[in-house]
Image (tube, rainbow, N blue to C red; front, side, top):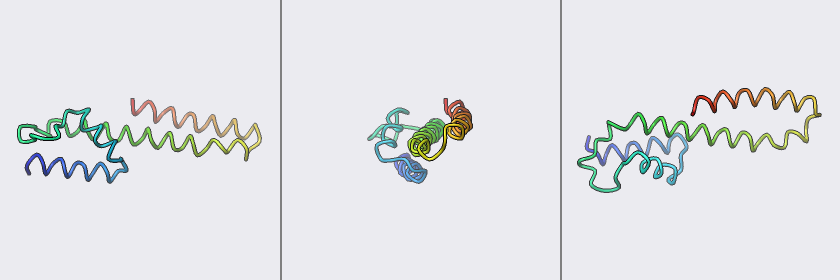
Length: 101
């Protein structure tokens, strides 16, 4: 498979995990994937780093969405239950944040 086809396949796979076009472009730029002249670029040397960065980015976005979606819970729970909820979710989110560092 030539380098251009590999980039197309990679882009398709990254969009499949829920990354936007902008996210994908930033990842490819971060990892030095040229927009043109791909014939001398060996994507295979960088593919694992790109996927790792992609999943870290996706996890970060999921954490942010989760935190945003739970902000209203305080109005639904009394203080004691909300504090327990926050403690448990903070532990989970902290563990996920440590993984994606």
